[in-house]
Image 1 (spheres, rainbow, N blue to C red):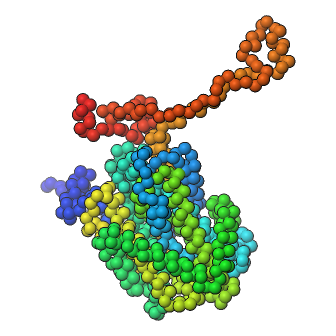
Image 2 (cartoon, rainbow, N blue to C red; image 1 turned 180 degrees about the vertical axis):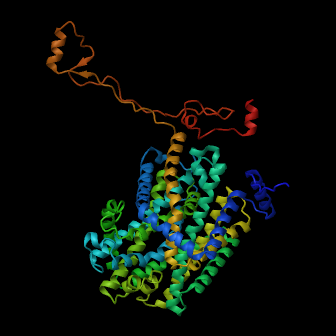
Image 3 (spheres, rainbow, N blue to C red; image 1 turned 135 degrees about the vertical axis):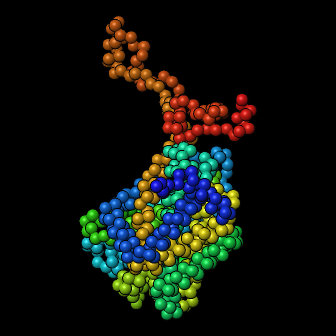
Length: 615
């Protein structure tokens, strides 16, 4: 009697099956990356819905362990990222062009700054503009350590320090590091717009192999989850606003409705394309957001107080920054930092590939110094203005007005409703709150739309032709993950978002360290080593009496000595240190002894027609 044995398909057979499925669906992407990412997303959704309690318990337990034992790693990582960016920009590599050496910037300075303004900050500003300062004002993070009393000027000062710490330089360092890597490897080395391309100095051609594909799948999953958390926060905020304005209940059903509407609008925008979709919505929303900011500044009757407070708080933040950059809540060990700072860093880093590719796209032709200073300064500067105005306007209501914000946000835990409780203290509150809801909706529609485009290009490895169906799939995936986390996770919505994203963020922090090394190594390979510095030469000086003694003594030769300090050569004149670049060898092997040869990270190849001519 013969035995039947189950056979496991080989890698080649699996690849063939995926390719056939890919062709049958008329896709144009990498089958392994696309179907691998899709499988993980669907598995997470099915497992969370089918095994709600075990999945919730496992996620919560794992995230608690990470926050307790590795929270310091997240804190250290972001500060190191910021220091590395400053080091790269200030050093000799700061003059390296992100693109061909003689190519001017693709966009004018004004247009570039305007696009940076729109890069990923809208959703953050709308959700946390009031909630963050008021939360720390009503419940100071360092109350035990510094003896701060809630609701005082000292608490307000520390609240703004943490708000700026969370949403200015450090947050934008998380976005800037992958953005700089993308810009360098896409525009300088002409590699595909994938996260794996950043690791080309380490992997070589392996970026197209299994390791490269795993990196890209992780990046896509992280982007989907990161944007889903943003949409989830926006959903909670929209539901809170609708509850205050129209009495609509804050529950799972309405969360699903809001997610469906936002996702549906995003898919319409995706279908319309970049020019008619994202660009129009982004420009409209920027104008509306700035008008809302000006309204808060002027209409509250505390304009001078808010302006002075914003300037003063920024100065306080700069003084406190070195301390906050490595603060780990060691003394109180209250766990506060885990649910605030660690959550922010993990959330931000998961969708940093999405923001990074967008920033890299618009930065071709800029130098690294221009890139780092612009990407750090412009969005961070606007965040200072936004949080300063909303923060001090909130403090004015609490300290010199009717109050109630702390009770709502800290006492009741209604963080999503903070903005609308705040606007209730202004004239035309209903109308302005409706405008705010529209702004929030559009911000999240553009986030889902752009994320679908970027995720699709990461899966494809190019931006030349993207079938509409693929982009729609990624938009639907974001909506599915958002709904799963908010509605089907079995936890409070915000808690579920926090627990999940802290887990997803860990591999991105690990990859961040390798990104720094890969970029530095690529710069050294491409820019070459600096020549040794040449200086003027000087004769050996002797004290006068010793010089005279040696002149009288025949055993000594005084020709090489002087009494008066004297140089023996002129100051070296720097000429052009670059020589004509030799053509690479036809077989593609780098010269022995060069850094690429020693590391094996770069193999120069010629196009086929040139190889034929060289023979």
